[in-house]
Image (cartoon, rainbow, N blue to C red; front, side, top):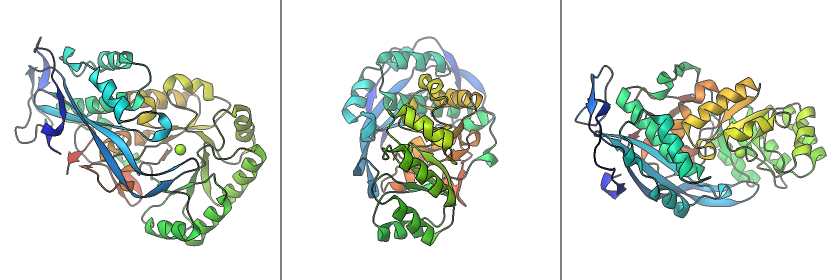
Length: 379
Ligand code: MG
């Protein structure tokens, strides 16, 4: 990616000198032990739309698609650049148009200290309601930038052990038995699979997967079941088939049915579509036993950290997930993964035109690169 391809939004005139760090002239990344000196920058935001090409047609209970629109952002300060990304799957209602419109209203040039993250993110939150993917793209870029200025990856700034990352699942969409068998065989490097259910072939999907592998599975119904008795019957069937949890079994509006199911199900019931932001989390108590946190839903790494902290206090299980995204947003989420029970961070592996290299999956496990910020490099 060429920086000139970004739409440049310059800041206001450089104001007071704030804390900065020396940067390595070759790549702009500050190394450990860099001396801290006064910078002269203001934050400069750039962004451009991009379309992800999916390797396979991706089918869930409610739709099929072959592309995902994203917007790639960057925030530059004092010669150092942090990268971010907004990914807009159709169900969240954001689009290239809405994200570009949101970003055009953002003036980061008023800030001359990227470490005042609380102030900057509060300003971004107030620009417009909603628009969480757009907000996440700025939050991620800001985290990447500040991590690079400090010369440290975020998992280390948070004090997390990179050896404690979870296994990640690889997603198998709803399809015919032949295709499911083939995709399951292709995913043999993974020690966990996420199986999409919710159409009329639930048992066939599971039986096909089980004819090929006995690895544990996550199940995501994407609101596809309408009848709670069927859902409970499936929960027992899935428990016998070594599932770990069921995600969003019924429409989020069927609150009483979901609470009924959670009380009786042998497997944890995880909220995804029902839960977007941290302020909705307390309302999940007694309805779900776990939550799926995604940066694009909640607005970024800062909000995700708050959600994890609160969800733990509420005794809930935590899954960290993603959309189809480049390695940028997936690597940002991966920084938090040592804190969670389960990870579903395969969004970058489902696309054919990634432009970053970042977190990897080694022996089925989320593996964090020892690079500053969110740990990505352009490829
Ligand atoms: Mg889901």
